[in-house]
Image (cartoon, rainbow, N blue to C red; front, side):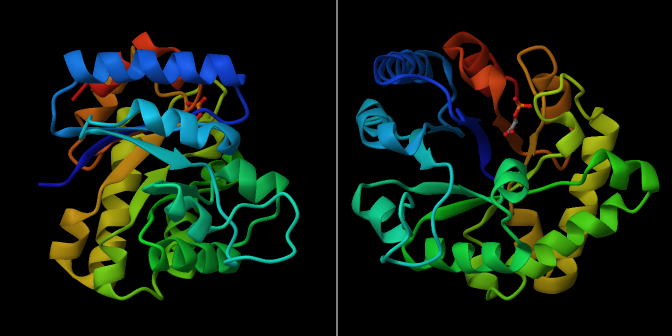
Length: 253
Ligand code: PGA
């Protein structure tokens, strides 16, 4: 059975007090409402990771994640946070390759391969994001483009290392736009990526890989998306900023 995961990407939102309050609300609702086979993850701004992490204590299916990390272990990289630092702070997950990082910080597939390595070397689980632009979708080349993102950033890994990675398919045209991929569009891509993974690592590895959908996933549409055979959960942006909506999504399997 693949792991079911709902991860909230808070992006650059919330003050210190707001972050603590949201984490406490989410923690209480995970405890009371979310089945134990659904892993819920909160990815706050890095400044608040340690505080938010405290709210996850003693709740097996609630964890914290970073939104990115640097590929180097330490050094003169002002403003950055490394994988060993996250590991030392007890952070189990890191989102890598979000389209906003690719767009605004020029993260390339090759650089992301190095970040994935840094994360895995430090026993962090990467939540690896991939996805196409509207232009690529309309041009018809989107399946091959997204498969190539996996090839260039992940397929250097051993099967064992690949088995530690969570994938999040996030069509760029659906992020923060209110335009969700239809369940048919999500299923088509997820099935294609699983087949692509099977081609490299074999069916058993592909079948064990959790592939999340992200992009305007909300309390209203999550159930339909999560009902797709190859959709194993969601990476949630806007709707993760309200505990009630986020938990409704986590209960949508
Ligand atoms: P959204 O963001 O849910 O606000 O569209 C998703 C994401 O960027 O991870």
